[in-house]
Length: 459
Ligand code: GLU
Image 1: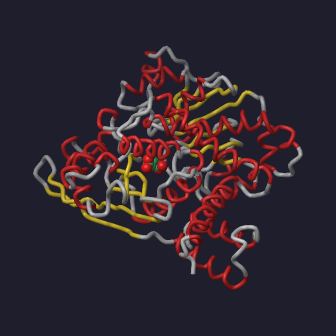
Image 2: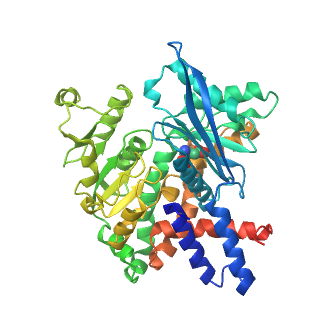
Image 3: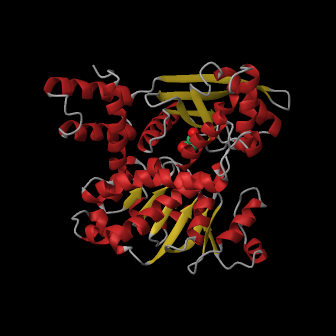
């Protein structure tokens, strides 16, 4: 398994192979063989679908746009995962993201498998009519492999409820008579979407951090103090302190997580920096997050980029280069932008001791190891950013039942589900020397392996 994902899965399987309490019926040669089968199953996707969407642009030109749907694994249920519109999309990336979805769903007991889609384009370069056509063509080309019981896409980077509404409508016209509501999640409320879905990822990201640094800490302070584990030291060093925070990305995930952090009465957060594709905004005394959220809502999602715009908000802050957010002298860094942001060439400049992954795969393998060796706690993507797919699951259930929950009920259920995972994972993590990412992988792989074994798929 070449990828970073692959190497952690392999490490998890190696640890489980040694652990005789796991699948105790499997012994000696049978055990070796079953684990070899597991490696083969988890390291490769079930299907990679690729098409070139034929699109007639508004200027009359016809273009072909590469599009993917990767179906990694459906052991636990229909494939599930977003569709990304971004110019850097490629087959390997979609494959890795699909694998992450398999583990994310397994980790949080969401009854779905893992999939991911991608279209190679920058949505800002296209007219609305063209984007509409692209969405329709995507569904058209992949209609045989999608469906509420087969593979259920959702928004990801560059897509949102508008795209899901268009796609669901296209699915409905191609497959009339099917229960189309469950074919896509992340739809607008009026189209069968779930209340709270838009905020779900950001809320979940903040919740994982708050749960660890407040709820878990309050109940386990003494126990933590008795642990040899370096990560327990890091947590205790930040206990009941003012926590300076920087947030990379101020989109759907970062801005919601920022608001949650700003409003949280359980922890003393001070958000000193936020960034987007243009700038980092910094104020040592803390930023007025609600004012920035309002500003971006009226400025196509962008943060202020000039002194004049800041003055218009009556806000005192410095405008810095966008990547500066990563290197701030803070306690907590939330990564809610793109993947691969912290890598071997910049990892030694990172000062935060707690990193929360709102984006998928924002830390590369080399950097992850370096940070873990330095006692940095990384709350990994599959743990922290699962709020989106969890509420997608609630949306899918609501669409089937045609009964809808209130926003309050959704957030309650979301927190309950994420708490169940945290309750299992955190004692394991703080009790042994593996980083949190590895613990999450082990847990997810355990679940998948047990199901595969019981289904007789390992021999
Ligand atoms: N794209 C989101 C993710 O990476 C959500 C997927 C979903 O809701 O199915 O988790």
